[in-house]
Image (cartoon, rainbow, N blue to C red; front, side):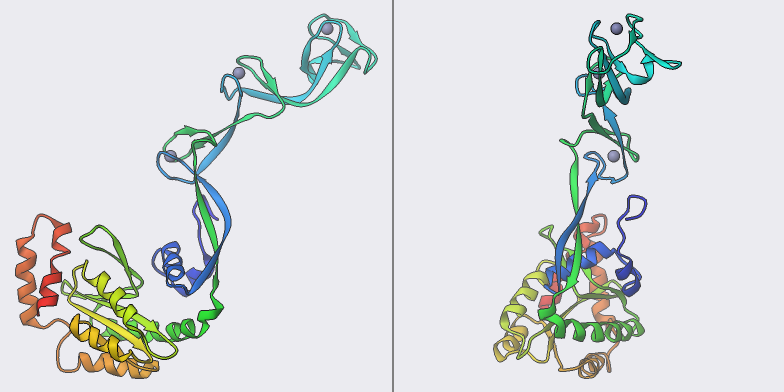
Length: 321
Ligand SMILES: [Zn+2]
Ligand SMILES: [Zn+2]
Ligand SMILES: [Zn+2]
C-alpha cells in the first residue's frame, strides 16, 4: 500500500497497463486465481477515499481537544489530574488544595494512562476515534465508515495447465491483432444494454467496429455451456464479430451452437494453430470491410447525441448479417 492507494507490484511487472485490481478480479472470476482476505482498509463513506487521518475524540462530547497522560488522584480533596500538574520541583503538590502528597496508597494513588477532554473535562481509559478524510474533509466514526477488503491472490493450481496455456497465447494473439491495426483491451469490461458490465478476455476495435474474443480451454473439448455463456454476454452488447477460441477443440454440439448463434469459432491445440486460424480469417479481407463499415456508420449516425445508445446498436446488425 502506497499513499492510500493499493498497488500490486507483481502484477504491474506482468501487465504494465490497466487497472490491476480489476484484472485480478477478472482472473478470479474466471477461476484462474484463488484469493484470501489479506487486510481491510477504511474508506470515507462520502467520497470512497482511503486517505483518512485518525483523531482521538471525547466519548461524551466528541471534541478532539484531548489530552493524555498518567494521572494522580488526591484522596483528601478528590482532585484527579495529570501527574505533571502535581510536580513542583522535588515534591508532589496538589494543584487544587495546595497540600503536599507524601505517601502513595495513603495520600494519593496513580491512575494508568487516561484520555481527558479539554472541553467537558471527562476522562476515560479509551478515547473515541474519528477519521478525517484527507480528500473531502468528511469526519466520520468507525460505525459509519466502509471497509474495503484487500485480497491476496494465488494461482489456482488446478488450473495450472490452462494458465500456462493462456499466458503463452495472449501476448502473441494480442500482438498479432495489434499488427492488424486493432486497438486492444484485455481484459475488457463492456457495458451491455442491460447495464451489466460483461467481461471479455480481449476486445479488438478498429474503425468503431468491435470484435469480442473469449478463450476457453478444456482437457477434452469445450462444451456447449461455454458457448451459451458467451452468447448470453454478446447478445447484450454491441459488436462486429464474436470469436470464441476453443482449446484444444469444441464439442460437436458446441460447434453446432456457434453456427446457430453466428459465433466465429476458432479451434486449436496450441498457440501456432490458433494464430494460423486467426490469421486466415484476416487473410483476404481487411479487419473492417468497407461495405460493413458504411452500414455501421449509418447506424451510429442515427444514434448521435446518445452515446450510451450508440454503443449498443450493433447487436441486431451483427446477428443479422
Ligand atoms: Zn488536593
Ligand atoms: Zn468532552
Ligand atoms: Zn472523503
